Length: 77
Image (tube, rainbow, N blue to C red; front, side, top):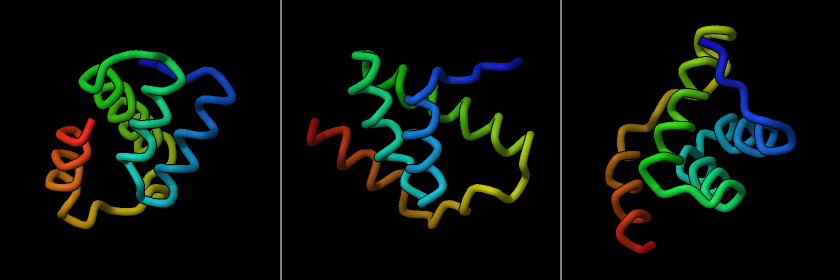
Protein backbone atom coordinates (compact mmCIF):
# COMPACT_ATOMS: atom_id res chain seq x y z
CA UNK A 1 0.00 0.00 0.00
CA UNK A 2 1.48 3.33 -1.05
CA UNK A 3 0.32 6.18 1.17
CA UNK A 4 2.73 8.94 0.28
CA UNK A 5 2.08 12.33 1.80
CA UNK A 6 1.82 15.32 -0.53
CA UNK A 7 4.77 17.70 -0.77
CA UNK A 8 5.86 19.82 1.11
CA UNK A 9 4.15 18.02 4.01
CA UNK A 10 6.05 14.81 3.28
CA UNK A 11 9.41 16.60 3.46
CA UNK A 12 8.57 18.31 6.74
CA UNK A 13 7.29 15.11 8.35
CA UNK A 14 10.27 13.09 7.11
CA UNK A 15 12.74 15.73 8.35
CA UNK A 16 11.25 15.47 11.84
CA UNK A 17 11.33 11.67 11.67
CA UNK A 18 14.96 11.65 10.53
CA UNK A 19 15.79 13.64 13.66
CA UNK A 20 14.03 10.97 15.69
CA UNK A 21 11.21 13.35 16.59
CA UNK A 22 7.96 11.51 15.95
CA UNK A 23 6.00 13.91 18.14
CA UNK A 24 7.14 16.86 16.03
CA UNK A 25 6.16 14.94 12.88
CA UNK A 26 2.68 14.38 14.31
CA UNK A 27 2.40 18.06 15.25
CA UNK A 28 3.43 19.13 11.73
CA UNK A 29 0.89 16.74 10.21
CA UNK A 30 -1.91 17.99 12.48
CA UNK A 31 -1.18 21.64 11.74
CA UNK A 32 -1.06 21.04 7.99
CA UNK A 33 -4.18 18.89 7.75
CA UNK A 34 -6.35 20.01 10.66
CA UNK A 35 -6.99 16.39 11.63
CA UNK A 36 -7.18 15.06 15.16
CA UNK A 37 -4.37 13.64 17.23
CA UNK A 38 -5.32 10.00 16.64
CA UNK A 39 -5.56 10.43 12.87
CA UNK A 40 -2.25 12.31 12.72
CA UNK A 41 -0.48 9.69 14.84
CA UNK A 42 -1.81 6.89 12.64
CA UNK A 43 -0.80 8.73 9.44
CA UNK A 44 2.73 9.37 10.73
CA UNK A 45 3.06 5.76 11.88
CA UNK A 46 2.01 4.59 8.40
CA UNK A 47 4.67 6.89 6.98
CA UNK A 48 7.28 5.43 9.35
CA UNK A 49 6.30 1.89 8.31
CA UNK A 50 6.53 2.80 4.63
CA UNK A 51 9.98 4.39 5.01
CA UNK A 52 11.18 1.35 6.98
CA UNK A 53 9.95 -0.96 4.20
CA UNK A 54 11.57 1.11 1.45
CA UNK A 55 14.77 2.13 3.26
CA UNK A 56 15.39 -0.08 6.31
CA UNK A 57 17.55 1.55 8.97
CA UNK A 58 17.08 5.09 7.64
CA UNK A 59 15.09 6.30 10.62
CA UNK A 60 16.64 6.38 14.09
CA UNK A 61 15.43 3.79 16.59
CA UNK A 62 13.03 4.92 19.32
CA UNK A 63 14.69 5.78 22.62
CA UNK A 64 12.07 3.99 24.69
CA UNK A 65 10.55 7.06 26.32
CA UNK A 66 8.48 8.03 23.29
CA UNK A 67 5.21 6.81 24.72
CA UNK A 68 5.59 8.89 27.87
CA UNK A 69 6.59 11.95 25.86
CA UNK A 70 3.69 11.41 23.44
CA UNK A 71 1.22 11.20 26.30
CA UNK A 72 2.66 14.35 27.84
CA UNK A 73 2.24 16.27 24.58
CA UNK A 74 -1.21 14.79 23.99
CA UNK A 75 -2.35 15.90 27.43
CA UNK A 76 -0.84 19.35 26.90
CA UNK A 77 -2.86 19.84 23.73
